[in-house]
Image (tube, rainbow, N blue to C red):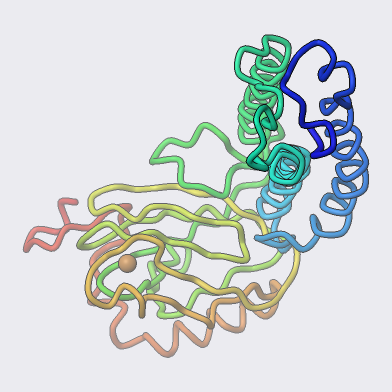
Length: 293
Ligand SMILES: [Cu+2]
C-alpha cells in the first residue's frame, strides 16, 4: 500500500489497492525471461567441470539445467523480497502493512506443486543420465558398477591413496606403479580407487571424476577423455595433517602414441623397484601377508 492511501484497511481502501500479485509476477516474468537464457546459453558452457571428458560433459549439462531451473526461483524470491521491502514497509501509519500471504491457498498450492515437480524432475533426470545412456559414471560405484560404458573393453588404471599422495598402477604393464597419472585419449578408463591407510577421495577435477578411496575397498569409476591436456588431482576428503598438500598438477591426457612413449619411460625409470611391489590386486593390506589380500 502506498503512503498516500494509508487509510485503515477496509472495503474502500482495498478497492484502491493495486494488484500486487500481478505486479510482482510481471516484474518477475520479464527478469526471468531475460536472465534464464543468459544463464543457460552464456554461463552454461563455462560451468565446471568443463567438457574434457564424456562424463564431464554430462555433469556440465546437468549443472546447466540446474542453474537454468534455479534462476527463476532465485529471481522470484529476490523480486518478492525487494518489492515487499519497498512497497510493504511499515511507514509508522496505522494499517500501512501489506496484504498477508499466510493462508493464501492458491499461492501455497502453486509453490508446493511447482517445487515438487522440479524435485521429481531433477531426481528422475539425474538417475536416467547416470544409468541410461551407457557412458558409465564419473563417480565411484563400488566394486560392482551398475552404470557401465557401452562398447570396447576399458583400460584399467589403479589409483592408490595414502597419507599424503596418490600413486597409480597399470596392471596391463606388469603392475607398474607410477607417481604421475597419464591416460590415453579416446579410450574408456576404468579407475580402481583404493587406499592404504585412511579415507581419501580421488578427485580428478577436469575429468569430472570423484571417487572415495577407502582402505580395503575397490571403488570403480569410468571416464573417457576426448581431449589431450593437463588436469589436476586433489584429495577431496579431509585425511589428516597434510590433506591440503595432497594434490597433483602434472596429470594429463595424452595421445595413444604419447601414452606409449610415457609408459615406456616409466617402465625404465621404475625398473629397479617394480619387482619388489606386491602383486597387482584391487586392495592391499599393510600386513606381512599382504599377498593374501
Ligand atoms: Cu587424502
